[in-house]
Length: 438
Figure 1 (cartoon, rainbow, N blue to C red):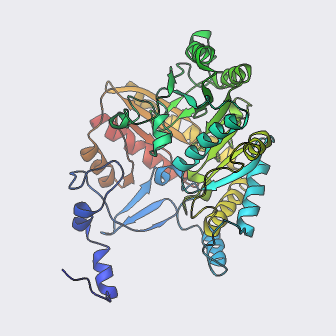
Figure 2: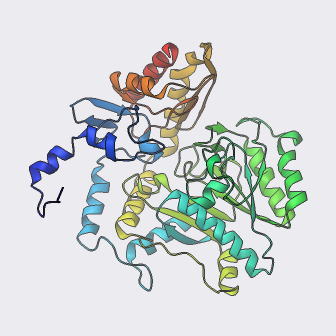
């Protein structure tokens, strides 16, 4: 069929509400075309509510995969982006710079631990991890140790879907086993069994200690998600474990990469999850909530030592450069989001959310089908004994007026920080009722 030169606006309007076409032609994350899993067309969003094309409203319990910390359609975010839009939407970062990128870099350096002094902007969390891994490899090349190209990662970890990031995701539960024969072969150590708030025993750290003693001459860095393992299982582990990881990396001369893409900007109760252990990584990855969910942007921060070493080694430059690196609109969104967060009483607000999540989901612990209930900061997890039926449970949540997107055995909540007590109670009551009946 020939494509028309001009498409009338009313046809666009009809297309935007064509769920059948979406199901037949549009890929969604971790889905197949012609999937039986339902999709729901969002017409608009305001605060913590999603309005569907059929007029139904849903309370968002996911903050759109953890990034919309200030909710939707925030007036300060909108105003900042509109102002920047009238200046420029984008300009290449090669050979040029601009105010939003410079100001955001200064802002990130100010709020992260002092040794982190340089910022590399990229497009997404997965790419931020790729950048971190490439930094680590180039660092050791500059130190005349090119054999140090492998990474140690924790089992049940998740770091993204690009090839380097996939290689450090759990090889069994990390959703990427199909590609195992073409991915770099990394070194995996036991997931820490010590829960958050508990001490870390020698048994908990033994697997990592052995791996470092055996392989440190080939290892560029240890990479982990501090305190909270996200999409690999939503596990919260001991801050003491993280402190011991830092000590072991120092003892064996290995870099430490902290993937705070999910945990950064207050989600765990600290501005950055590393603060629970009072440690600083050599390389820090940020994304998701960085822009308050408005635009895709990520940042990889590192120390002056790492950054300057890359400049001294061959080829004398860092070998990465995304087309949309440091997009001015995205940088403006990030600056505004950070200002909104730091200008609020965010610590007490996260404590409020944590307290209500614990209280509201407590009864789930008594259900026979539930293995565990755990809460940290603005994160709540109900772990089932068996995987949930995604089709039926998602539909049940929508019919109840909430948006909750489980995966595997996990029904979890990561709401926007602006959520009210009343809406949070609705979320926890709904999760409790639906978990009990599913």
